[in-house]
Amino acid sequence: MNSVKDVATPSIAFLGLGLMGQPMATRLLRAGWRVTVWNRGAARAEALRGQGALVAATPAVAVAQADLVVSMLTDGAAVAAVAGQAASALQPGTLWIDMSSTRQAEACQCAARLAESGVAFLDAPVSGGVGGAEAGTLAIMAGGAADDFARAADLFAVLGRATLVGPVGCGQLAKLCNQLIVGGTINIVAEALLLAQAGGADPAAVRDAIRGGFAESRVLEVHGRRMLERDFIPGGRVTLQLKDLENVLIAAAAARVQLPVTELVAARYRGIVDALPDADHAAALLALEALNPGARVGTAPDRLP
Image 1 (cartoon, one colour):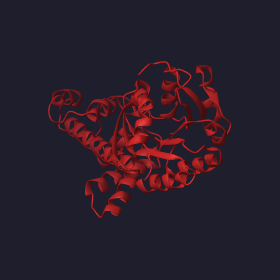
Image 2 (image 1 turned 180 degrees about the vertical axis):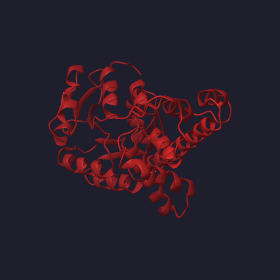
Image 3 (image 1 turned 30 degrees about the vertical axis):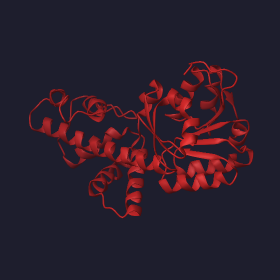
Image 4 (image 1 turned 135 degrees about the vertical axis):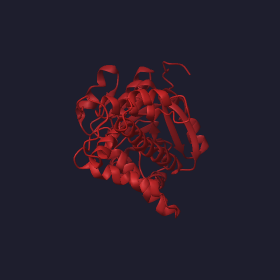
Protein backbone atom coordinates (compact mmCIF):
# COMPACT_ATOMS: atom_id res chain seq x y z
CA MET A 1 0.00 0.00 0.00
CA ASN A 2 1.36 3.42 -0.89
CA SER A 3 1.89 5.73 2.05
CA VAL A 4 0.54 8.74 0.15
CA LYS A 5 -2.86 8.44 -1.48
CA ASP A 6 -3.89 9.81 -4.84
CA VAL A 7 -7.05 11.72 -5.71
CA ALA A 8 -8.97 8.47 -6.22
CA THR A 9 -8.61 7.62 -2.55
CA PRO A 10 -11.92 7.35 -0.71
CA SER A 11 -12.67 10.32 1.50
CA ILE A 12 -12.99 9.64 5.23
CA ALA A 13 -15.12 11.24 7.91
CA PHE A 14 -13.55 10.58 11.31
CA LEU A 15 -15.96 11.11 14.21
CA GLY A 16 -14.52 11.21 17.73
CA LEU A 17 -11.04 12.41 18.64
CA GLY A 18 -10.49 11.19 22.18
CA LEU A 19 -7.44 9.38 23.57
CA MET A 20 -7.61 6.79 20.78
CA GLY A 21 -9.36 8.66 17.98
CA GLN A 22 -6.92 11.54 17.72
CA PRO A 23 -3.79 9.42 17.10
CA MET A 24 -5.73 7.18 14.72
CA ALA A 25 -6.93 10.16 12.67
CA THR A 26 -3.41 11.57 12.78
CA ARG A 27 -1.98 8.39 11.27
CA LEU A 28 -4.50 8.52 8.42
CA LEU A 29 -3.62 12.14 7.70
CA ARG A 30 0.09 11.42 7.74
CA ALA A 31 -0.47 8.53 5.33
CA GLY A 32 -2.04 10.97 2.88
CA TRP A 33 -5.72 10.16 3.30
CA ARG A 34 -8.37 12.83 2.80
CA VAL A 35 -9.94 13.17 6.23
CA THR A 36 -12.73 15.35 7.59
CA VAL A 37 -12.87 15.31 11.37
CA TRP A 38 -15.55 16.06 13.93
CA ASN A 39 -15.39 16.01 17.69
CA ARG A 40 -17.85 17.11 20.34
CA GLY A 41 -15.12 19.36 21.79
CA ALA A 42 -14.01 21.42 18.80
CA ALA A 43 -10.48 22.10 20.10
CA ARG A 44 -9.36 18.52 19.46
CA ALA A 45 -10.60 18.72 15.88
CA GLU A 46 -8.94 22.09 15.31
CA ALA A 47 -5.63 20.60 16.47
CA LEU A 48 -5.65 18.42 13.33
CA ARG A 49 -6.35 21.23 10.88
CA GLY A 50 -2.63 21.97 10.61
CA GLN A 51 -2.02 18.37 9.54
CA GLY A 52 -4.41 18.69 6.63
CA ALA A 53 -7.73 17.71 8.14
CA LEU A 54 -10.95 19.42 7.17
CA VAL A 55 -12.91 20.31 10.31
CA ALA A 56 -16.69 19.88 10.38
CA ALA A 57 -19.01 21.62 12.80
CA THR A 58 -21.48 18.71 12.93
CA PRO A 59 -21.49 14.98 12.20
CA ALA A 60 -23.84 15.58 9.27
CA VAL A 61 -21.43 18.02 7.64
CA ALA A 62 -18.53 15.62 8.24
CA VAL A 63 -20.17 12.64 6.51
CA ALA A 64 -21.86 14.45 3.61
CA GLN A 65 -19.09 13.73 1.09
CA ALA A 66 -17.55 10.71 2.78
CA ASP A 67 -17.06 7.29 1.23
CA LEU A 68 -15.96 5.84 4.54
CA VAL A 69 -17.07 6.95 8.00
CA VAL A 70 -15.01 6.00 11.06
CA SER A 71 -16.52 6.49 14.49
CA MET A 72 -14.41 6.23 17.64
CA LEU A 73 -16.76 7.21 20.44
CA THR A 74 -17.29 6.53 24.12
CA ASP A 75 -20.01 3.88 24.01
CA GLY A 76 -22.98 2.52 22.13
CA ALA A 77 -25.26 5.36 23.19
CA ALA A 78 -22.81 7.89 21.79
CA VAL A 79 -22.52 5.95 18.51
CA ALA A 80 -26.30 5.80 18.16
CA ALA A 81 -26.64 9.53 18.88
CA VAL A 82 -23.95 10.57 16.41
CA ALA A 83 -25.25 8.19 13.73
CA GLY A 84 -28.69 9.73 14.22
CA GLN A 85 -27.27 13.22 13.76
CA ALA A 86 -25.43 12.14 10.61
CA ALA A 87 -28.14 9.97 9.07
CA SER A 88 -29.79 12.58 6.84
CA ALA A 89 -26.48 13.44 5.17
CA LEU A 90 -25.21 9.91 4.53
CA GLN A 91 -25.08 8.81 0.90
CA PRO A 92 -26.20 5.32 -0.18
CA GLY A 93 -23.15 3.12 -0.63
CA THR A 94 -21.23 4.74 2.22
CA LEU A 95 -19.45 2.32 4.58
CA TRP A 96 -19.66 3.17 8.29
CA ILE A 97 -16.85 1.61 10.35
CA ASP A 98 -17.51 1.83 14.06
CA MET A 99 -14.25 1.31 15.95
CA SER A 100 -15.77 2.16 19.34
CA SER A 101 -16.33 -0.48 22.02
CA THR A 102 -20.06 -1.13 22.35
CA ARG A 103 -22.44 -3.98 23.06
CA GLN A 104 -22.96 -6.62 20.40
CA ALA A 105 -26.68 -5.84 20.27
CA GLU A 106 -25.96 -2.12 19.87
CA ALA A 107 -23.74 -2.84 16.86
CA CYS A 108 -26.47 -4.93 15.26
CA GLN A 109 -29.07 -2.24 15.90
CA CYS A 110 -26.86 0.46 14.41
CA ALA A 111 -26.19 -1.68 11.34
CA ALA A 112 -29.91 -2.26 10.82
CA ARG A 113 -30.74 1.45 11.08
CA LEU A 114 -28.00 2.43 8.63
CA ALA A 115 -29.02 -0.31 6.20
CA GLU A 116 -32.38 1.42 5.82
CA SER A 117 -30.47 4.28 4.15
CA GLY A 118 -28.33 1.98 2.01
CA VAL A 119 -25.29 2.41 4.26
CA ALA A 120 -23.08 -0.60 4.99
CA PHE A 121 -21.63 -1.22 8.44
CA LEU A 122 -18.65 -2.86 10.09
CA ASP A 123 -18.15 -3.03 13.82
CA ALA A 124 -14.37 -2.97 14.23
CA PRO A 125 -13.27 -2.28 17.81
CA VAL A 126 -9.59 -2.18 18.60
CA SER A 127 -7.09 -3.22 21.24
CA GLY A 128 -3.60 -1.87 21.84
CA GLY A 129 -4.18 1.33 23.73
CA VAL A 130 -2.87 4.78 22.92
CA GLY A 131 0.59 3.40 22.16
CA GLY A 132 -0.84 1.04 19.54
CA ALA A 133 -2.92 3.85 18.04
CA GLU A 134 0.16 6.05 17.72
CA ALA A 135 2.32 3.26 16.28
CA GLY A 136 -0.30 1.79 13.94
CA THR A 137 -0.15 -1.61 15.65
CA LEU A 138 -3.73 -1.94 16.86
CA ALA A 139 -5.47 -5.28 16.86
CA ILE A 140 -8.69 -4.67 14.91
CA MET A 141 -11.57 -7.14 15.34
CA ALA A 142 -14.14 -6.69 12.59
CA GLY A 143 -17.68 -7.96 12.20
CA GLY A 144 -19.56 -7.61 8.92
CA ALA A 145 -19.67 -8.73 5.30
CA ALA A 146 -16.48 -9.88 3.60
CA ASP A 147 -16.79 -7.36 0.76
CA ASP A 148 -17.21 -4.48 3.23
CA PHE A 149 -14.16 -5.71 5.14
CA ALA A 150 -12.23 -5.70 1.86
CA ARG A 151 -13.28 -2.08 1.20
CA ALA A 152 -11.78 -1.10 4.55
CA ALA A 153 -8.55 -3.08 4.16
CA ASP A 154 -6.28 -0.18 3.15
CA LEU A 155 -7.61 2.02 5.95
CA PHE A 156 -7.15 -0.77 8.48
CA ALA A 157 -3.58 -1.34 7.29
CA VAL A 158 -2.65 2.20 8.38
CA LEU A 159 -4.02 1.58 11.86
CA GLY A 160 -2.95 -1.97 12.63
CA ARG A 161 -3.76 -5.61 11.93
CA ALA A 162 -7.39 -6.41 11.12
CA THR A 163 -9.19 -9.75 11.30
CA LEU A 164 -12.74 -10.47 10.13
CA VAL A 165 -14.21 -12.59 12.94
CA GLY A 166 -17.81 -13.03 11.79
CA PRO A 167 -20.97 -11.12 10.82
CA VAL A 168 -22.01 -7.75 12.22
CA GLY A 169 -21.75 -7.69 16.01
CA CYS A 170 -18.98 -10.27 16.19
CA GLY A 171 -16.27 -7.61 16.22
CA GLN A 172 -17.73 -6.34 19.48
CA LEU A 173 -17.97 -9.88 20.82
CA ALA A 174 -14.27 -10.41 20.03
CA LYS A 175 -13.39 -7.12 21.76
CA LEU A 176 -15.30 -8.22 24.84
CA CYS A 177 -13.29 -11.45 24.85
CA ASN A 178 -10.15 -9.33 24.61
CA GLN A 179 -11.24 -7.07 27.47
CA LEU A 180 -12.17 -10.04 29.60
CA ILE A 181 -8.62 -11.37 29.22
CA VAL A 182 -7.00 -7.95 29.70
CA GLY A 183 -9.04 -7.02 32.77
CA GLY A 184 -8.55 -10.40 34.38
CA THR A 185 -4.83 -10.50 33.65
CA ILE A 186 -4.26 -6.99 35.03
CA ASN A 187 -5.76 -8.11 38.31
CA ILE A 188 -3.71 -11.31 38.39
CA VAL A 189 -0.49 -9.37 37.70
CA ALA A 190 -1.39 -6.99 40.54
CA GLU A 191 -1.87 -9.94 42.89
CA ALA A 192 1.43 -11.51 41.82
CA LEU A 193 3.43 -8.31 42.37
CA LEU A 194 1.76 -7.63 45.72
CA LEU A 195 2.44 -11.20 46.87
CA ALA A 196 6.08 -10.91 45.79
CA GLN A 197 6.57 -7.68 47.73
CA ALA A 198 4.67 -8.83 50.82
CA GLY A 199 6.64 -12.09 50.90
CA GLY A 200 10.00 -10.31 50.88
CA ALA A 201 11.01 -10.59 47.21
CA ASP A 202 11.86 -7.74 44.87
CA PRO A 203 8.68 -7.46 42.74
CA ALA A 204 10.60 -5.96 39.81
CA ALA A 205 13.04 -8.88 39.87
CA VAL A 206 10.15 -11.35 40.11
CA ARG A 207 8.56 -9.75 37.05
CA ASP A 208 11.85 -10.05 35.16
CA ALA A 209 12.27 -13.66 36.28
CA ILE A 210 8.92 -14.84 35.02
CA ARG A 211 9.02 -12.99 31.71
CA GLY A 212 9.77 -15.38 28.87
CA GLY A 213 7.93 -18.21 30.61
CA PHE A 214 4.28 -19.15 30.29
CA ALA A 215 3.28 -16.08 32.33
CA GLU A 216 4.69 -13.67 29.75
CA SER A 217 2.14 -11.25 28.29
CA ARG A 218 1.75 -7.66 27.12
CA VAL A 219 -0.13 -7.02 30.36
CA LEU A 220 2.83 -8.23 32.43
CA GLU A 221 5.15 -6.11 30.29
CA VAL A 222 3.15 -2.86 30.11
CA HIS A 223 0.88 -2.87 33.13
CA GLY A 224 3.35 -4.69 35.34
CA ARG A 225 5.79 -1.87 34.69
CA ARG A 226 3.06 0.69 35.38
CA MET A 227 2.34 -0.93 38.73
CA LEU A 228 6.00 -1.05 39.73
CA GLU A 229 6.38 2.62 38.78
CA ARG A 230 2.92 3.42 40.22
CA ASP A 231 2.08 5.25 37.01
CA PHE A 232 -1.70 5.41 36.71
CA ILE A 233 -1.90 8.19 34.11
CA PRO A 234 -4.44 6.70 31.71
CA GLY A 235 -3.90 4.75 28.57
CA GLY A 236 -7.11 2.82 29.15
CA ARG A 237 -9.37 4.27 31.85
CA VAL A 238 -10.94 2.45 34.78
CA THR A 239 -14.34 3.73 33.62
CA LEU A 240 -13.95 2.15 30.19
CA GLN A 241 -12.54 -1.11 31.53
CA LEU A 242 -15.54 -1.45 33.85
CA LYS A 243 -17.93 -0.59 31.00
CA ASP A 244 -16.38 -3.35 28.91
CA LEU A 245 -16.60 -5.88 31.73
CA GLU A 246 -20.24 -5.00 32.34
CA ASN A 247 -20.85 -5.57 28.63
CA VAL A 248 -19.06 -8.94 28.88
CA LEU A 249 -21.51 -9.95 31.59
CA ILE A 250 -24.46 -8.78 29.49
CA ALA A 251 -23.17 -10.84 26.55
CA ALA A 252 -22.68 -13.82 28.83
CA ALA A 253 -26.26 -13.56 30.06
CA ALA A 254 -27.50 -13.39 26.48
CA ALA A 255 -25.44 -16.48 25.62
CA ARG A 256 -26.63 -18.22 28.83
CA VAL A 257 -23.16 -18.82 30.22
CA GLN A 258 -21.70 -17.95 33.63
CA LEU A 259 -18.32 -16.17 33.90
CA PRO A 260 -17.48 -16.17 37.62
CA VAL A 261 -13.95 -14.76 37.24
CA THR A 262 -15.25 -11.84 35.18
CA GLU A 263 -17.81 -11.13 37.89
CA LEU A 264 -15.00 -10.88 40.46
CA VAL A 265 -12.85 -8.66 38.24
CA ALA A 266 -15.79 -6.33 37.54
CA ALA A 267 -16.35 -6.03 41.29
CA ARG A 268 -12.74 -4.92 41.79
CA TYR A 269 -13.20 -2.11 39.26
CA ARG A 270 -16.56 -1.12 40.72
CA GLY A 271 -14.73 -0.61 44.00
CA ILE A 272 -12.54 2.19 42.60
CA VAL A 273 -14.55 3.67 39.72
CA ASP A 274 -16.13 6.43 41.79
CA ALA A 275 -12.82 7.57 43.30
CA LEU A 276 -10.56 6.95 40.28
CA PRO A 277 -12.71 6.98 37.13
CA ASP A 278 -9.98 8.40 34.89
CA ALA A 279 -7.03 6.42 36.26
CA ASP A 280 -5.41 3.79 34.07
CA HIS A 281 -6.95 0.35 34.48
CA ALA A 282 -3.66 -0.76 36.05
CA ALA A 283 -5.14 1.00 39.11
CA ALA A 284 -6.68 -2.40 39.86
CA LEU A 285 -3.54 -2.58 41.99
CA LEU A 286 -4.96 0.20 44.18
CA ALA A 287 -8.19 -1.73 44.66
CA LEU A 288 -6.16 -4.75 45.71
CA GLU A 289 -4.00 -2.74 48.11
CA ALA A 290 -7.15 -1.33 49.71
CA LEU A 291 -8.07 -4.92 50.61
CA ASN A 292 -4.63 -5.40 52.17
CA PRO A 293 -3.86 -2.48 54.52
CA GLY A 294 -0.13 -1.92 54.88
CA ALA A 295 0.76 -3.91 51.76
CA ARG A 296 2.06 -1.88 48.81
CA VAL A 297 4.02 -2.52 45.62
CA GLY A 298 7.11 -0.36 45.23
CA THR A 299 8.09 2.88 46.94
CA ALA A 300 7.32 5.51 44.29
CA PRO A 301 4.50 8.00 44.85
CA ASP A 302 1.31 7.37 42.91
CA ARG A 303 0.98 9.22 39.60
CA LEU A 304 -2.75 9.84 39.08
CA PRO A 305 -4.73 11.99 36.65
